[in-house]
Image 1: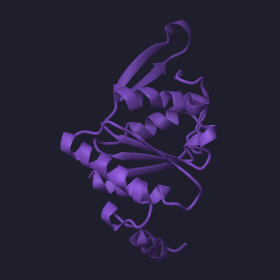
Image 2 (image 1 turned 180 degrees about the vertical axis):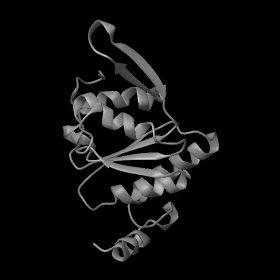
Image 3 (image 1 turned 60 degrees about the vertical axis):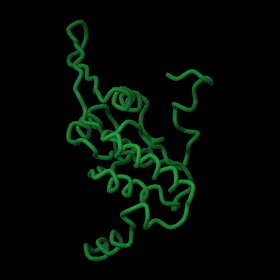
Image 4 (image 1 turned 180 degrees about the horizontal axis):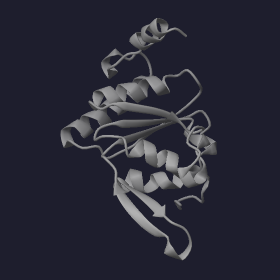
Length: 167
């Protein structure tokens, strides 16, 4: 696709919730989320969009980033193959940025588990070295919003644990 066509496609995508047509319940919920974040002045929750292709998961992610006055970093679960890939992405983000992970169900389990302290404590735990001399370093991560999108909700390992028991 040529650069001009790409820019035209991006111009068609709504930038604010008020311009988004359809999915009234989702828009209403996102509006409450965004209003709460803006009133508190800090991000505290993350979002998971799921459903068939073409229903607006990516568009809504761009809208959330615009409404939170942050930049969006787009990646795919299939492209993040190692924990180091995720660490490289996370350490280049700023406060209020949105990390959008499309096809989040394709994240390898170790990478998915590395996201938990990031989402809960805005910290990235990295192991340096191997064997008895290995040590853990905790890096602070900016206050970001992580948005995951999937067409295959049942493939998320978090949802495939015992009821009421999270990993």
